[in-house]
Image (cartoon, rainbow, N blue to C red; front, side):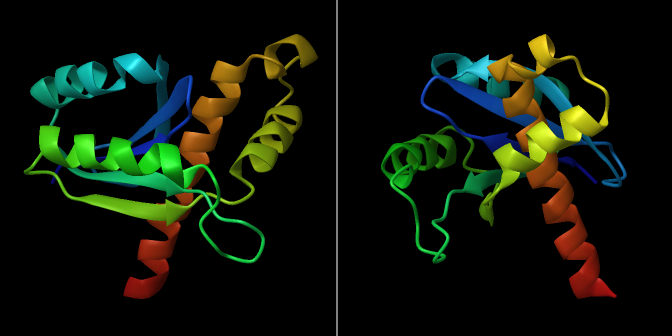
Length: 141
C-alpha cells in the first residue's frame, strides 16, 4: 500500500503532507515554493510509493468553487500529466487555514513562529489529509 500526499496549493507556497505507510496518520513535509513543487514531487515519488494525490479544493461559504480555482486548475493539469499513474482527488479545504492557526495556538507555538506562512501552509496540508483520511474511514464503517 502506497502513501497519500496532500497538497495545500498556493500561488507562492504549497503545504505538503503525507501519510505513513499504513495510512493512519498525516505528517507535514517541508513547504515548497510553488515553482519547485513538481520537482519535489518527482523526487519524493522516486523514493516512496505514492498511490494518490489529494489537492485542497477551495470553496466559498456557499460551497461554490472559490476564485483560487483559476490557479489550481492549471496545476491539476500539470500534476496529472507529470504523474499519469497516480490518481488525483480534490478535497474540501474550507477553514483549514483558520483551523491551522488555532491548532498552532493550542499546540503552544510561539506567536513569531505562527506568523511563518510556511508553517501555516504545512499545517493546513496536514489538516486536509487528516480530514480526507477521516472521511474515508467514516464511509467504510
